[in-house]
Length: 184
Figure (tube, rainbow, N blue to C red):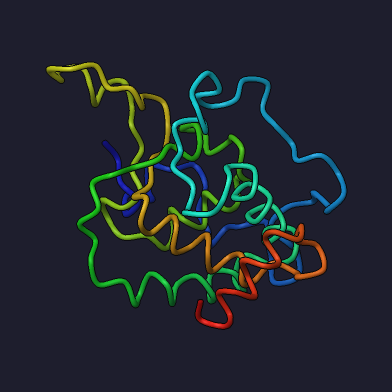
């Protein structure tokens, strides 16, 4: 499996990012339907095999990341999320969720996947390629996807919720955000 610290094999390099200091991570605008690939990653499974943070639905997680991508540049969001990564002490989570195809497309903005590849340490975000699983004793059910440790994904998602414009959040996410701000 390729891991998040193996950037040279990836066609995208953050330093060559078209997302300059003034351009947001996506051209999608709130109020528009969230773009979907023709084939959605693990569509036939509940929650697309992803475990959303407690109290959230998978659609909430998607909306949060699209809202953040529409309102932040690469560098500004990187600066916010890198603190979550830097303060994480325990990287021993062995539960993973698929979040994108190997081409970084899927239910989340490609630039968000690129950013995660950039900031996450080895083993917390991995690409699962078919050739990596050839000698496996059991079939690998995540082939063809990027998978992320659930704990860091949940921490980053809660942080992203705190960054999303309050006025664009549905009531239940606004309540969750304010509840988190109050330390509940």
